[in-house]
Image (cartoon, helix red, strand yellow):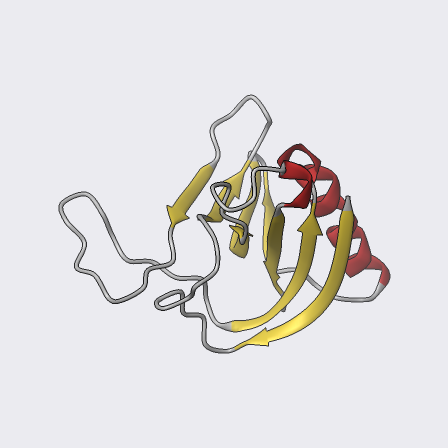
Length: 135
């Protein structure tokens, strides 16, 4: 597993016309591992689309993000997330989330899978951005 961590100004978050990768998982609420997670699954599009019934447009809020770029197996992502959050704490970077009795609510937390599995079958080479909005 490889992990690069940086703070990145993403004042304009657009995924229309983005040539990279696969889905974007936007987390809203994470509770106990046995409980469901509230998240939105999105995909970058080559051009604007009109959503059909049951589909909605959504976006990450613009701002400054702590970005961990993880290269490795998807099963290693939880370890990488923990390392990014530890880096934030050690470096005085406040991540925008709120603790609640049933878990954590997030303002801007996402995983963006940049590697298309069809293009790279070796999962150890997959690249995923771990995004955390900062305060």
